Structure formats: C-alpha cells, structure tokens
Image (cartoon, rainbow over all chains, first blue to last red; front, side, top):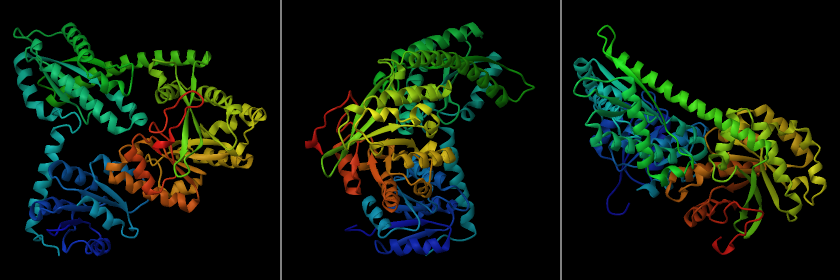
Length: 120
Length: 439
C-alpha cells in the first residue's frame, strides 16, 4: 500500500457476509465502501473510483459473473470474486469473465488479506 | 458506510447497468465483430433496394468441441484469429464492399451478408462461388502457427442461403431463418467429414496403429522418478495423432471401449520393462472392471510389478458423471491392490466435497489449471483449496502440464510434491530421460 491508502469496494447483499469481509479488509485499509445491490455497484465504481473490488458471485439482483464481466470490460480494476459453495465451476467461470482471484467462503486465515496484497 | 443516496440513485443505477449491458452485447467479446441486431437496419435498406441478400455462415463451432481438449483460453485465441482473418478477407477489394461480416452470437459462427451487385443480381450459384473462394482465402491467410496448435488438419465449413424480401414477414425473422438454413448446410458438410473420420478410426483400431508413449512423473523434492504415465498417440501426422481428438472421434463413433482396451493392453505390455517401485499410470474408464481380459490380471504374471504400482487414472468428469460405476470400480480395484487417481481435477466438473468423497490415492491437477499459474492468482486460489482437500483425505497431488520454471516454482511454493510436463520431459518411447538439474 505504502504512500496512499487504497480504496476497496465490497459488493455483497448479505449483511452477515458484509461484516465478515469488512473485518478482513479493515486490516488493510480504512477506505471501504459497500454496495448492497449489484446494480448499484457500477455507479459506486464511478463515484468512488476504487482500487480493488470484492464481489460475491451470488448477488440477489444481478449475476456476479455478469457484473465481473462488465467491470473488467469497462474499468481497469482488479476483481476478487467470492463463492460460498464448494463447487469448482464458479471458479472457472469467474476466470472466464476476467476475475483476478476467487475465494471460497468462509475464508481461511489471512487468505483474503494475502490475495488483496498481491493485487494492489 | 453505505453512501449511495436511496430512492433517487436506483434509477441511474439501472441506466448505467443497461447501457453497459447493451454495449457488451452489440459487439462479440471474442471475435470483436458486431452482432446481428446492430445490422438489422442496414439489412432492411439493402433488402428494400435489391429485394434479395445472400448469407454465408462459417461454422466455427467445431473448434468449440476441441475446447475440452485444449481449454477455452486456447480456443478463444483461435476463434479470435479466425474471425480476424475472415473480417480481413471480407473487407478485401475484390468483393467491392459487397460483404458485411458479423457474429451471430458469442463466437459460435461468423455470418457474412453478401449484397447483390449493381445490377441487383444474386443467386445461389454466385453464393456458392463466393463461399468457396472465401474458404480458399481463409486457408491462405490464416496464421498457421495458431491453428496448428490444435489441429494439423485444419478445416472450416461454410453453408449459404438466400434471403428474399417479404413485407409480410418480420425482417428479423427473415434474417435469422436465412442464417439457420445456411448453418444447417455447414453442419451437414461437417457430418460427412465426421463419418469419414470414424471409418479412419475403425481402420486404426483394426490394425492396432496406435503408439504408446511414456511421460515421467517427477518427485520434486527428492529428484526421483515416481513413475510414468502411459499416453496414447494416433498415427503420425494425422489429426488423430492427438489423443484427445482420437478419443473424441471414438466417442462419436461408439468405439471408446475398443480403443481403450487396445491402449490398455499395449501399455501394459511394457510392464516387464518397468523398474521396481515405479508406478505406471494408465488412463481408464471405470467400465474397465467389466473387461474379463483385464480382470484375469494375466498381464501381471509376467512382470515384476505388483498391482499396488499400477495406478488407474479416471477423469474427474467420468468419475462424477458415472459415480456408481466409479464407486464399484474403486472397490474392485482397491481390493486387488490397485491405486486410483483422479485425472484432470479442478476442470470444473466437480466440487471440493465430491473429490473428497471419491477418496482417491492420487489427485492430478488439470493441465489448464497449471498453465500460467505463476501469473494467475485465481488458479493459485483453486490449487490451494484442492490441496486442502488432498491433505484431509491423504491423497498425493500431481501437477500435470508443467512447462516453465516459473510454473514449477509456483506449484512448489503451493506445496505440490509431484509434477509432470514438458519442462521435465516430453512423452516419448520407453523411457524418456529426465534432466534433474532443472528440478
């Protein structure tokens, strides 16, 4: 991180998971924004201009895969995707849509932090 | 910390989303060509003026079929290259701006609309000529290096059809009907070709014209050879030299059982030449338990190999698809002392849980998972998750398809113990040497 604090946007509709993710991200930066709706996320990216986006692949309103594709096609921001079942296919699909990382929930120790550090 | 203004913001949220969605859909991501909806108005003008328009479909979907063998990343490159070539060709002067190329949907096939000449003349023979010329030019222009990566026998198929103006039918429907007719023709050409290949394969099996090659599996930390995987190759310099294509054709022609048995018996005939405590990895369908010749285990009597050094590799895909067959194969072979390996793990057909349930002795990571893993965090994430499972069920993990030093270092750091790939040795006649200074 060094000179400037990084801005991280979390896109997650589940309040519990928001807290779980935020707890991890808090250890890296204090500039955290949260979008609770997928559709709102693209506007939030314009508004806050984050350095990294963390998004759940299974959002209520729009597909996380589509959102990943739209973000990667239109903005130059690293995207970490999250999935909470143990299926492997979401990993591959997230990769196809251009995601930079994909993690299973719940996180293993420091997994999210390490991934964020590698991408910033 | 939710800062978005409620109520009012909802409207603009949707506008941006819809805008980006449309922009995404109107141009195909892989071929970078416009899609049909974007051209409907142009087509309407042409049809109003000339009453007819030609349509040629170039079918790229056959490359989609190779996706399983080569991974979508490679296929994307090829489709991108092909559509670039087709686009270049269609904007060439000889056509006098009479061809517009578009993508039907998501990189499956390229559609070319052929506009009649100044006199408004267009008929099916003209279209046939143009489509033959097109295919011929594609062959001349395509980047051979890119295509040869997946096939030595490069083929594209084209079909064509005419669209006639009919004010009583919606234009969109007219256009898509024309495209469908043309693509049916293209796939008919392909079917004939496929039938021909199935006959070739029957001949190959009949004459036992396959070759077995071996690729060493390396114990990275101890700099030793753990064993060899027996791989099949079709006749040299034919499309079927590639085992994936060989087996794809076998599947289409219902010849998998015959081909598998031939490969298995040829591979096992090398057993007497194996050193003690070296494993032989053999690709297998779970149905192998129903092969009486294999059950008799006669092949083992003449070699110094015990069953515990024979590893049957069953792909994640078949294991999941045929869970019952797999389970009975597992029980049978384990009772005889054989080892079982899950091949192509992490290709996306299973879940972490189901791999744990299969409880194999070895887990082999899919080649596509290892390719460029050093620069790809998402692949590292998945390998780590799989390593976790392997540790829990006490399975050994093998990374397949290691090609570079960077890939080797990355998997080493992730804790993978065994590796296989061009970096150590290419598959070769029994048995290719390994340069351990690289390990």
